[in-house]
Length: 99
Image (cartoon, rainbow, N blue to C red; front, top):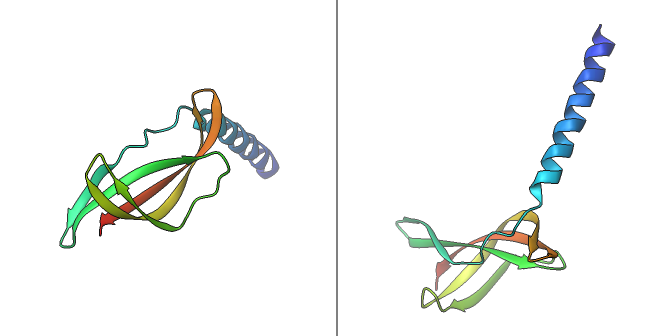
């Protein structure tokens, strides 16, 4: 009985993992600077960036013309693979503050 439960559990895990992986690849989120929140230090911004080689900087600074501010960005996590048109790329999530 226990062996049967293990087999069923392993099969369910494999099926769920396969479905999750297959549906994870879709269109990339937009590369737009948005306000992520605010605290006593001021506004916090967020952006999702794309890279074809899965090589993302931990920290970088750049001027963002759509908010008219220079922001220091911090890598917060890997989003995953996604499609930019018909090209597969990698995406990562960043948060930052105006400097």
